[in-house]
Length: 125
Figure 1 (cartoon, rainbow, N blue to C red):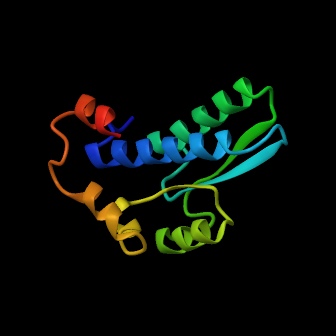
Figure 2: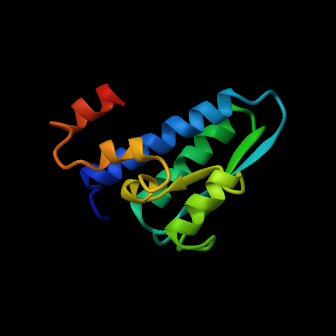
């Protein structure tokens, strides 16, 4: 199984924070979150989304779940970013450099060697 690069790990961290904010912002109503990833089903980031979905379902007693769309099922990265902005996709694991086209502040996370280590990144994010 491939090892996550620093950039992929950063993107995954951003997704986790977004998911936590989305879950905390909802009431007790059941919800299915739609998650998009351009990678194949066996890729680590897709597996991480599935694992996160299992944890969410378990910890909410099944009130919330994540349906993962992998392998560009919902479109290419630019299209899924636009769908996320429109509210059609709840979670989108994508290249942070593309997000910078829509939210310029995100370009900061695309800078090389921004974090000294994974621990440093986790502390900052």
